[in-house]
Image (cartoon, rainbow, N blue to C red):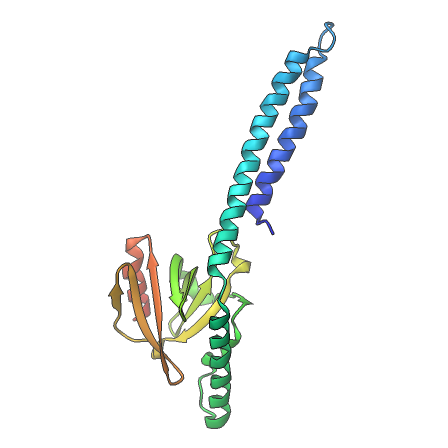
Length: 215
């Protein structure tokens, strides 16, 4: 399915085809010399060149979106792992009665529409490459005073298409981080397991900002 940008570019290309064809006919019939084919051909060729240019851009955007969607698609093993984590979290909550409600929310909110909390406006970090549960994807971090929301969203997706992958309580997040090549790596507790959250960004100034927000 094409995204909005690709659809708009395709529509512009088709419009230029139609408009150029009609304009060529009208322009060729002006005056008393009858139908001037050279004038019509000039307009038709111009419309074809311009139209194919926009249609080509539309296909490029469409292919890039498909590549991003394919690379960000969770593997079956990751999906099964998330399912097991959900079962473990539910059993722990029923048995002890003291499990964190945010852990349940983190597992049940996979593939749901992202709804950023009102206080996250200053803690929304965009254009990140994230690695979580062995899966690498494009996304964002929405950081509040008490929690970190890991959001999957590609560059071509709208805000409403973003998906919350996991919600991490700040009290479960390590105070220190590791540096592995371009990635900053934080550890956090999820039930009885230790997980890792890795991220990198092309904006070097965002690293210091994220570290300060995660304290």
